[in-house]
Image (cartoon, rainbow, N blue to C red; front, side):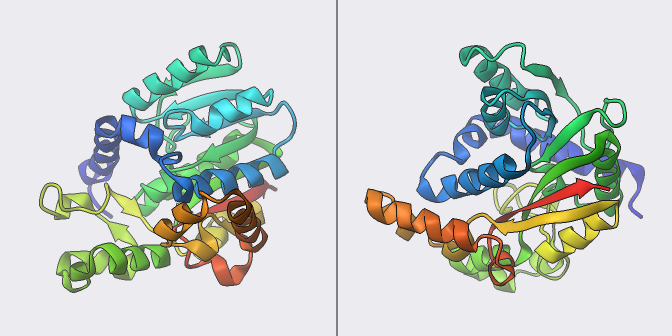
Length: 283
C-alpha cells in the first residue's frame, strides 16, 4: 500500500485541479449537445428512481448542476465538494435561483469521510469522486460512507468514466500516446496519475477509469443491489461533431435522443461509452 502522504496527495491534486478549472467545469455539461447527453441521461435515471421530496446528499456536487435541478423539484440537498471555488459557484446558483432553504448545507468535504450521521439520506449522488480515487482504500472508504449515510432502501447514483471509452478517446485525440510508456498503468489498470506527466501533458487529473461491470460488482460487494447500469453517450460515443450537427435539426435531435435513451442500459452498449451511471439500492 502507498504511504499515507502519497494517498492523500492524490486527493489534494484533484482539489487543485478543480479549483483551477471551476468555471470551465461549471459550463462543461452545457457547452454543446454532445456534452449535454451526460446530463440528460443522468437526470432521466435520477428522476426514475428518486423519491419525491427526497433528502439527498450530492457528494462531489461541483457547481451544483444536478443539485439545483433536484431543489427545483422539491428535494432538500446537502452539497459537498473538495473545491471551494466550485462550492462558491454552487452557492451563487442557489441564491440566484431563489432556492435558499432547500440546501441542507454547502460544505467542503471528501467522499472518504462524510460528516453526516448514519441512515439520514434517501439518496446519494456521487458524480465524480469514484472516478478520481486512484487508491483502492479511498474507493472502499467512499463506498462504505455512501452505504452508511443512506437509509435502508435508499438509492445511490454513481457516475464512472469507462476505461474502454478512454481507449477510444486516446485513439481519436492522442494516437501518439499509444506508444507512451507512461500510459501503461492507465491502459492496463485504469489508473491515470497526473504527476507522471510533464506539466500540461496529462489528459486529466488523477483518475480511475472503471470497467462498467467492475463498478457494478464492486458496489454490490458493499451491500447494494443494482437497479441500473447505463451509458450516457452510448451509441454516439466519440461522435461529438456529428451529434452537434444533428442537434441543429429539431426532428433529428429528438430521434437521436430517443435512440440514445432506448439503448442506454443495453449491456452491449455500456462498456464503450465515455461516461456511465450506476444506480443501486441499499440492502
